[in-house]
Image (cartoon, rainbow over all chains, first blue to last red; front, side, top):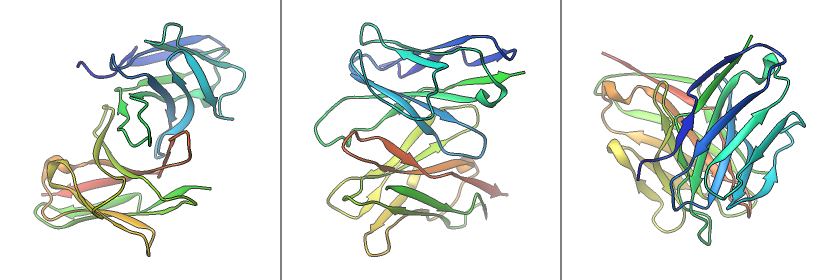
Length: 116
Length: 113
């Protein structure tokens, strides 16, 4: 078990550019979550997948954001036409989908995005 | 709607002193409650969680938390602070049938030598 990994760890981009982040969950975990965290705040839910199906998207996820999990393993989060307000830490978490939902979410180290 | 309030964005204690980080929640359903810790430049790590059963929950690194339904609280404590406890601590509650976590804003724990 190598844990949840995210790449890149840091990304600096200019306003208007597109960026893509990758998350590799723990291999047996079928649920995968994306969160955004800004300085001094807790994580905010963006979206989650069960296997390859995207089951819910937050209203925070504007049309410029898209997430995929094509084979039910790794996931990508793309932000098009980045804005300075997109600067944040993007966190990925995974867990099993047991009944009751109390299984722990395991987090990756995050990707810190800075939009200049 | 579920929500989490953490009292105090920063808490400062001396090394060896009691740590108390406060968390209050609101939930329309029986809550599942979590404490996570985040060290600088690292991801979130689960400290402990309450689902059902015993209301006093013990976690890693000597931390524990007590679920008090009447007070809608889930405060985190540690009898004796260590320098390595300096980090940001987040309280979270399960939101709904999709089992999404709703997070507090976090409390930064500062340990004075």
